[in-house]
Amino acid sequence: MDMRPLGPYTVSVVGLGCNNFGGRIDAARTDAVVGAALDAG
Image 1 (cartoon, helix red, strand yellow):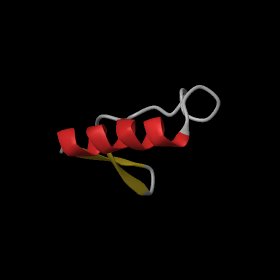
Image 2 (tube, helix red, strand yellow):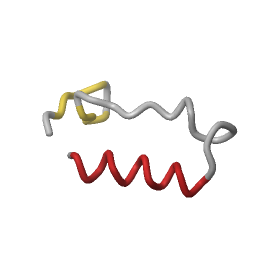
Image 3 (tube, helix red, strand yellow):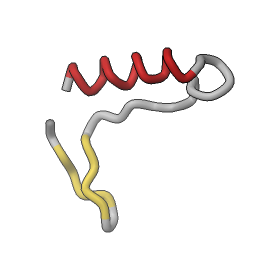
């Protein structure tokens, strides 16, 4: 995964937004989404 400096941090060039987490999907579905993203790299 490509990483870039952002101020004092090193971040990935692609991010996974969290706007839908919380009120829209439950914890189990959130875990599934994050797990799939991590598995995909």
